[in-house]
Image 1 (cartoon, one colour):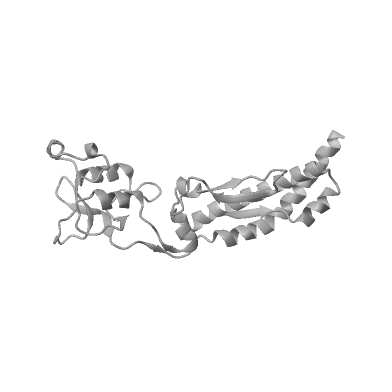
Image 2 (image 1 turned 90 degrees about the vertical axis):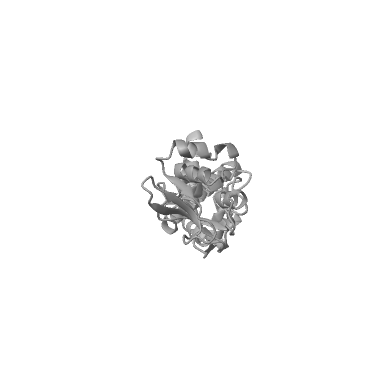
Length: 240
């Protein structure tokens, strides 16, 4: 979380021109505009350091707005962001926890090895964000009997009925194929769609949220203060 607040000296200088409630309203406007600039900076930073960040990733932060009686604005994680969210690893570095897919495979898949992480392979169909396409992922999980709901897993009867469709399988122990989920096309050719690894991915610090946010705050707050207090002075004059 990044806090944006006013130095009391700044506020006192402007109070000489305006009544307290008007000055505080102008200050709240400036704080909120600065917080919006910081949020935009963070989202732009994501575009620079990540490969096609998803909407979910870019919306992980929000602005908690200042009010005239509470002259602090915050750029913070949304309440829906958990303490193990992967963006924390991008900010602080370290090993990430399992994704939902990895935890599902670990608990449901009949597999002798350890699945700590699962990464799309070259044969996987990817969406616009570079993630495994939902349709193919669900087909693969059903085929290898790893869906959370057993009723959605592919049955032997369904496999016979749709034998012309591509199938998915996990190599047996001792196979010459590397661990993961493989796809068998109707013509018999195979390609790998998901890698299994017993090691958790480890991230280096990449996002740089705090440093960049402080720079934006220092650059933009004085500009916003000058503009919002001028706006309030004009509004008071028109009222008078």
